[in-house]
Amino acid sequence: MDAVKLAVIGAVLLLAGGGAVLGGVLPAADALAIADRVWPILLFVVAVTVVAELAAAAGVFDVVAAWLARLARGRTVVLWLAVVALAVVVTAFLSLDTTAVLLTPVVVVVARANGLNPLPFAFTTVWLANTGSLFLPVSNLTNLLAAHRLDDGTPWGFLALLGPSAVVAVAVSVALLLAIHRRHLRGRYVPAPAPRVADRVLLRAASVVVLVLLPLLVSGVPPWRPALAAAAAMTCLYAWRRPGRLRLGLVPWHLVVFASGLFLAVGALQAAGAGALIAAVAGSGDDLVSLWRLAGAGLVVSNAIDNLPAYLALEPVADSPVRLAALLIGVNAGPLITPWASLATLLWHDRLRAVGVDVPWRRYVLLGLVAAPLIVALAVLPLAR
Image (tube, rainbow, N blue to C red; front, top):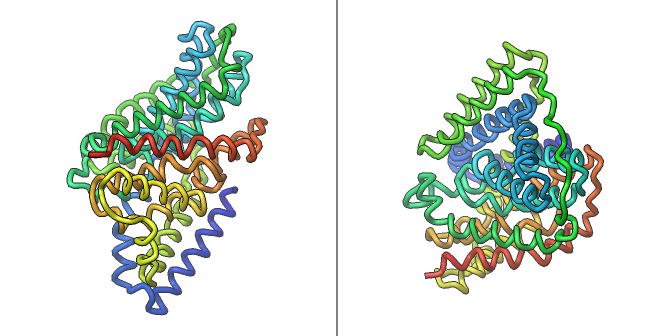
């Protein structure tokens, strides 16, 4: 799905939500409350996307990936494990979309440069973009929506609640990926030369901006503030070194329009009485079976429509910290089956096609049918009391 189609869908949803407000289905006060809740989240998404795009253009991800290839000393599985670690870090701090959109083509290029099959590396980025997005509030848009509902909404409070589940989700993903792609991850390779860097000053300065940003995102300051400051610093840097790279296309307008429309449309559905049906499906209680039921509902609804509206629809029944965590596991780690379950998956597939890698959706779906229920079920276990 390209940016234009996504923006069109978002515009239709905005119109539908606006109609609900005008028709009295969604009270104007509720619509304003939704806007007040989501503007910091959307501002963060815009700012961190600009930072990630400009960092990628400066060669930051290329240099890091090539360094990992040399660090692995020709051992394929070691390089793959290094990519796993990189994908987890990038997802945790810079969001799953950064991993899906920017890291995917980088690891494909590194795999090809070293004579390796790119498919194991491509599957690694998309699975870990989803399952690795449980660590921090900034890792996923759903997390940013949920963080304020926790007793301790700081990054450390979020990590204390969901960190063990995130580790399980990543560990199970890695074990499954290793089992699936073990034939291609054996053996050795001859490390390729380091990539050519067009502007070393730009590369070093962009790397500093990213390194300073990462700890600030877990400092307890609202994430949009350091992300916006980093985006401004990157913009100034490029205005100095490569002004031709600055363009309006760096701002993900399609995501902003799509997310805004989605928030308003789901708010209208909830105001129209969809909550009763949702409560019946998701159940209640904090015991393990109840948490599995809620996480499973998140998984099913995410793969049926998309994980963002799934979270918004099920959020009202996540009335305790552990239930909220179970819902996040379902909507973050569960969207591994259908192409539309996570926007990151669609973006990942588009990037792969752009670099000439074909991943049939049939194969993606079949693997996801095995992986998603197992990952979600095991990741919920640490929440059980």
